[in-house]
Amino acid sequence: MKKIAKNELLPYKEYVQVQEKFLQRVIQEKKVRRMKLNDRMSGLFETRLTVWYQIQEMIRAEQIERDEYIQEMLDVYNDLIPDDHELSMTLFIEIPNQQELRAFNKTVVGIEDRIELRFAGETVTSYEPDDEGEEDEAYTQSVHYIRFPFTPEQRQAFLAYDGEVIVAVHHENYQSEAVLSNELTESLQKQLA
Image (cartoon, rainbow, N blue to C red):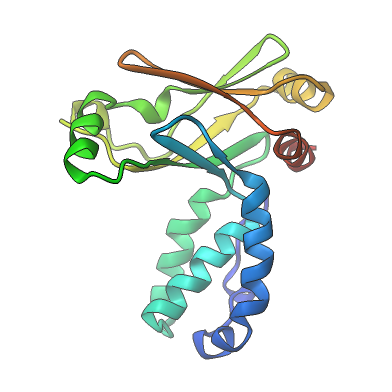
């Protein structure tokens, strides 16, 4: 998937005037691409539109005009756009009570590398680009930007598959499974095609 270029971004003053128009498109996109993994986690499979919107919202919120700051944003957020033969997901750990959240996050260190897509007898395991060796940390973050790298054979199997696709959390301290909606599966297949 093509990374977002600086010339695709609107200056914040211009963007504010058309923000509502884009917001509706992004809401529709996220409705399809967001899923609940379990009672503590959700995920958003990213697209160019969802990433572009995040960058635009940061530019708007911080009223960024300087090219070097915009480039920094592009460098950070373009990492959310998957490479060819990959899907990317923003993984959210969502526990409203901060004390419970901190306690839970201590038990699931390394979870970013233990999310699986299962289909047609295949398993694609997540990884987090630029992971700084979090396994040595005392707790994990509540937001992870993960990718699912497909081999050519897995990609072909996924594109041809019309059964249930499962997202599984396969951590030694926490396991769960959720089935992707047909609409989300079709959207992901279209993206990988």
